[in-house]
View 1 (cartoon, helix red, strand yellow):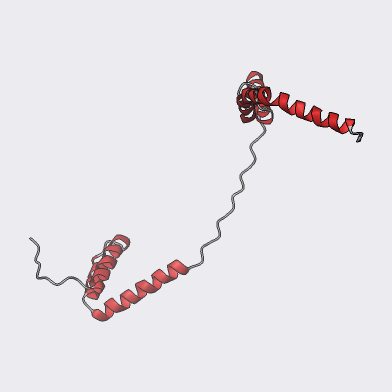
View 2: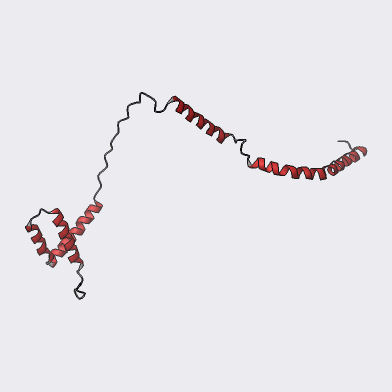
Amino acid sequence: MSDQTAPEPTMEEILASIRRIISEDDAPQGEGAIAAEAEDEYEPEALEQSADESASVAHDEIHAPQPEPELVRAEAPAPRQEPLVSREAASAAASAFGQLSAAVTQPSRQSPTLEDLAREMLAPMLRDWLDKNLPAIVQAAVRDEVERISRGRVG
């Protein structure tokens, strides 16, 4: 089991441990490098100096100017000798695009438009209204015109 009375490591100890692990991965496999770091781990001045250096290096790496990416120009591919698709396929594709273009520019008669639907729905209602009201409207208009002419007010 773990000892719960042991104090937690300080930030400096954690950083030193991380540096040691990184340097073990980067440094040549010699006992001198590991021993030197082990000595630095327990000296407070070395820890502070090492932490300051790490912070400075990290800051410099973050704010260092990034190199400009090199532009690589690809050579244009050589022109093809033969077409990519057959004449029949090209003709069929062109025909399909032509039909699509015609369908977009001219509405198809196969599917009714909103105007067509409204006209179909209103035609019976308009016919009923005219059947009921048109004779009276025409008679009133004729009567008014006859009266105007009979009184001598032509024009």
